[in-house]
Image 1 (tube, rainbow, N blue to C red):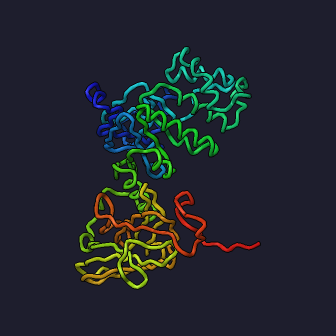
Image 2: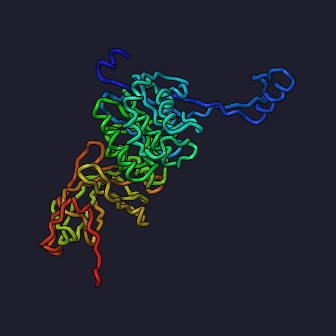
Image 3: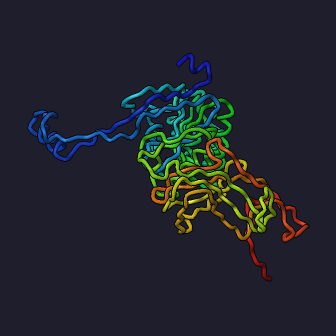
Length: 420
């Protein structure tokens, strides 16, 4: 991988597939019977049933020096399988994998610990397993202990550690390896908030130092805060890749719709290409278009469309986003249990928000019209590099003038009554 390394590519995955053989019960019985009779079972026999279960299908991506790739998807999507292939725990069935070494793997923290050994002894043992030399471990020993916060229990066998202490020590060792590539699997899903922040800070520090980070997480806020780009997997197939905001939006939409994520709907649809979203506008209460509103005031969001023919069942919805790519809320006729039928021609669907509780800032909107049965988008606005609609929210007279509301106060204002 010399030429790619010079170009800064630390990880390259090309056309990788992984299959596991799932044997039928009759095949297992024949193998056992063959062993008992000291005779090998005939794999070509008709009842030796087996089939392949594909965990990954033609997955390709690359990660450069200092980048962080987030892999998202539902349980069973193949996320951990990719990490295991990159860390050489398992091998791909097809495809090519090139990874700069050394690699720090945070897939099963503490997997190399010996329960009878103390924390001190396991730091040396696990560090050696991860490729650190003894002088290197010795020079970083105090940093590892401080990071793990196990000082009083350093010379206690780890079998007596709590699960939190065990994970902290495992992460601390792995995070102090001089690695060009870091592989992280849901590490921040464990431990207390303080430890999670410490882990995130360490990963950010290593990334700034030039390490390439590939991590799996269901924590979408973490993904948005750490990743430079993202990959969406579904049943082992890459469904989306690119900017973090777009990939997360695609993932969340699929969850909200209750459908599998697909790269393109394979079925022909009578509504596909029949509807076009022409614009999304913000309107004041008097119906005048605006790009500014005061916090707490009413607001109408209008989605205008053109339709080639009558559509008996569809959904209309939109989501509000911060400039940093954080989704604030999703409003959708499907969520509110309202089925829509659109007539041929031009028209619009209005969503009235009685009180907009967003705090002062600029916000962006993404929306679309979706198939009523599958939830698959027919046409969308503001996604994938298309036109963008935004609105600036300013402060309102309803708030105390002695308090200047800013993003330090959060994103939304929750109305409340106070008593004493």
